[in-house]
Image (cartoon, rainbow, N blue to C red; front, side):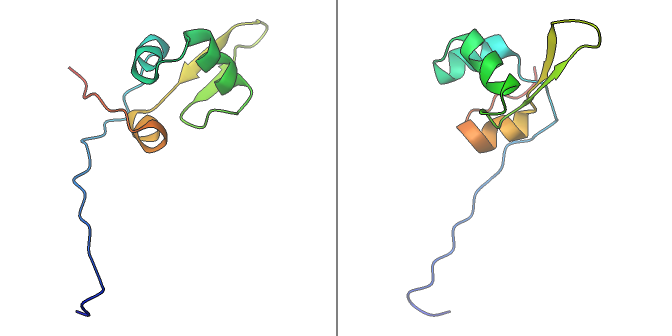
Length: 79
């Protein structure tokens, strides 16, 4: 290996696809829950999905743990 080449090894968290709740994300990243909801709805925040319910003005949110970690660095394993 050449002297200037360096290798970095990262141990990845044990992702499960857990849906990280909006309230937990709010505390973790220091933003208001409504800020996160609107950001997901508009596609500005990339760590989750907002899906509008049929015949309703309400949304469902899915923020998988791996995507949250990739975008924010936050991870907490399922208990």
